[in-house]
Length: 112
Length: 114
Image (cartoon, rainbow over all chains, first blue to last red; front, side):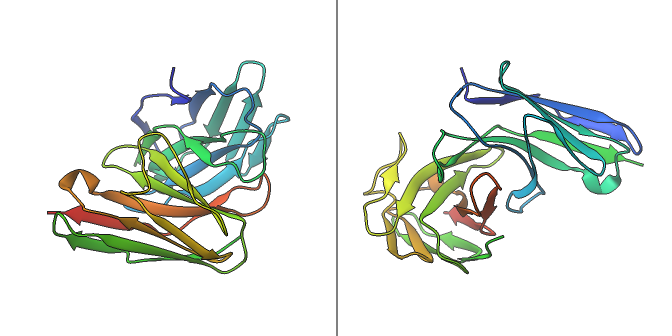
């Protein structure tokens, strides 16, 4: 079983659409969870951390279910500039400084 | 968040040669991580570099192929040795900003081996 699994994608949506990405992880010891965004030929950049209580940042909402080892990202009112690959990322253990484990990413393409 | 300067940004190298990639961080960090991203794939951890000790390598990666230096708390290098076309990838370094707040990446080194 892969350590971090994501929706296969790609997602092709019109502007203004709402799109949801799902992710599951296998390491129950993971303590930190993130969504990263990666634009073509660029390094990954942190989109948001994910907390058990759920968190929202503008049009983006992230949820974590530790019991199910499931993470989600909801993007509302999609913009053209949201087109990118979204990486579900967890840390490899419960110690500070543990390296990250990346999902393969889900590609989002928003069209006008 | 930390700022990382990674270089070179790209290189085209002959097979059999070696390339050293550098990452400079604007703050002191305990651990630095080196990743590889092959075309169309996600990031795979190569090794974790601690200052003052030997790097810890992940399965499938060995020190002879990817020697790492970590002379101080703000700097690290990764060397890709005896390169072959299969080593063509993007190589990225990363540090943790502070616990749980995310990780910052260098801008990456796009390596093509011909």
